[in-house]
Amino acid sequence: MANTNGGGVQTTRKTFAIVHALKELDGARIDELSEHLDMASSTVHRHVATLDDLGYLDREGDVYHLGLRFLTLGGHAQTRQPVFDLAKEKVDQIARETDERSQFIVEDGGRRMYVYTEAGTNAVKTDATIGKRGPIHSSAAGKAILAASSDEFVADVLDRHGVSQVTPHTIDDRETLLAEIEEIRERGYAFNEQESTLGLRAVASTITGVNGEVYGAISIAGPAHRFKGELFRSEYPDLLLAATNEIELKLEYS
Amino acid sequence: MANTNGGGVQTTRKTFAIVHALKELDGARIDELSEHLDMASSTVHRHVATLDDLGYLDREGDVYHLGLRFLTLGGHAQTRQPVFDLAKEKVDQIARETDERSQFIVEDGGRRMYVYTEAGTNAVKTDATIGKRGPIHSSAAGKAILAASSDEFVADVLDRHGVSQVTPHTIDDRETLLAEIEEIRERGYAFNEQESTLGLRAVASTITGVNGEVYGAISIAGPAHRFKGELFRSEYPDLLLAATNEIELKLEYS
DNA sequence: ATATAAAGTCCCGCATATCGGAACGAGATA
DNA sequence: TATCTCGTTCCGATATGCGGGACTTTATAT
Image (cartoon, rainbow over all chains, first blue to last red):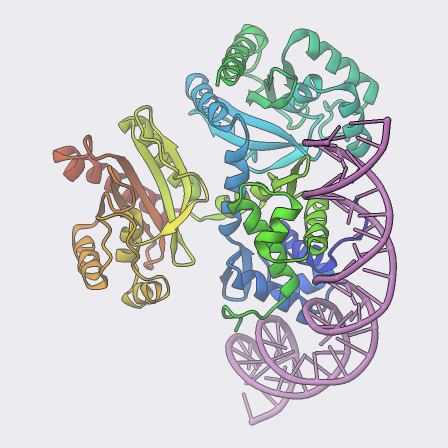
């Protein structure tokens, strides 16, 4: 059981600490990394040189960045998702038809992850790009995924990650969240009322397999001033339910 | 100088050997990896457990796969590309307008890499997905990138990777390739005449900075039976030149 | 139900690869 | 030219990765 202690291969942990730092700092020099990670500069140098030699870094003078080679690995994981092709198609279609932002989101390690996103012509600018992660309880797709999962799973995720407050509207109380999840189960889709970003609302519904496997969720997001009334409360939910149901049917007969 | 010898951090090399194997084998058990990589199963187990603990693997029973966490790193590298947003927009537009496949391709480590792709409604099915890599000399975008680069760069890339034959139509002779590159420099765009996939043709043109930096290339690809005559020889080239020129202008004034 | 096999997991002693301090070199600045 | 900064290389000490083997678990067949 390799539970989150310091066990395992420590050199590998060190390498990935450097990789994470390069991502957080959006590129860094050897010395910055050395200071940031509290490691000897000779150690950092050796690790960075190895990663560079393996082709995983982009070097610009003395500054190193994560290289596109990681996209090769990430792209493999992305297209491996069982419903990726179907979901991508629907996300593209929804973005084009609504002119808003649409996204395919999956649970990964108890958090939400954007596996595919597309922006329509009026779409709001967000930082929801491919591969981004965030807390699962503060988004429409995340809540929809929780609602489609078992109580044990939900409890486990909440135990591990809690219900942090992201905006003043985030549901940061476990009981309230569980009640909302129950509502979503009855309703069939989830809302996000500025719970992850102020001024942003969203709707989401899940893609579920015949045996109850939760493959992810598709959502539509946009500015609060456009997302209201019939459009927000019934048109978009219907659009999403139609899309996810169609995917589920295609899945069943293939 | 961390040139491609066995130096550096060997443990890290071992970890990435496992990562590569998991990608190539499209998932594997401990024992398969152990045999495939000729490492003790206890060693593989320790490495895999560490990667899993770091959140980089998806475990399905005894089978491990590359996890979506790699997409977080890859997505970071992708959006960091200087022209990514502009290129994505154009690729989407071209795919929608032509109903064919369009892609944004970059040089990485002497090979071509698909940084963003979109398929129009009639697009051919190919394995050109995000993050995929391939030889640079056997595609329209790759040849366009070479044509926009310096002679020294071209020589270096060809020295390192050669000109392998991918299909019967691939240019697998260095002199012929150099002559074609010269033609592309004069013409301003490149063709692919079934040189990477039989039955597939493509056109590409590059995005270049004011100081000659090559940011990548955008291409249109489709079946040979549709890609011919005026459409292939002048309409698509014009469309691509318009797109890449517009990106170059936006770059200049920002 | 029991036996057998096959694979995953864990343990531990040994060899060695990693670590970090220090020296060296390169490049920039005053 | 002197000085400073930071990347790079070297090398001895030791922490740590390695692999053989034991143990555990799961699946299959008798």
